Length: 218
Image (tube, rainbow, N blue to C red; front, top):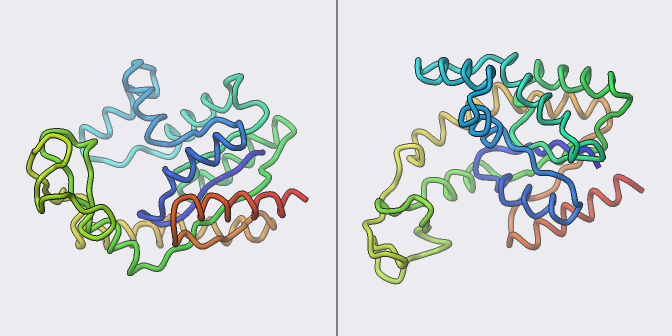
């Protein structure tokens, strides 16, 4: 299957993408991974992206599109893929359609993870990260440490990253509503959108998504 995954920040896209890609035996292609890979490998596109990022500017659509197309050209993506974070706006969505049409294929589904804004803020603003190791993360409600403010793994101090503050989350949501949400209507017009609730246990959301995709493919 060829799938695009969309949803607001905090919807659990990265987590669900990993599980769904494994279950469907297709590569999970995330924008973050594309950027990291191109920058670390020093590709021309990676160098361009890094220049913009160092200047504190957004990476232009054409650079992101180029990275995505290079990745989709790889052998493991020929029979299907799950895109996470791309396309992020209508320009990118139209470029993806053109790319696929040139290869005689098209998207099978656009999976929209729906979650109330209040839940997004609770999920992200409640995160706490270990100062010693950022991979050690907790949550004030959903994954509490044994000792408040102390990492269970290494004993480091837990803190709220600036990116996780409520103010920052609300700004990220504004960007999502302005730039990315319109592509849902774009894909709805093509009959591709499958919307599911992203509330509940991770396994429940994954099963909900698998059932919805199976129904879409039937």
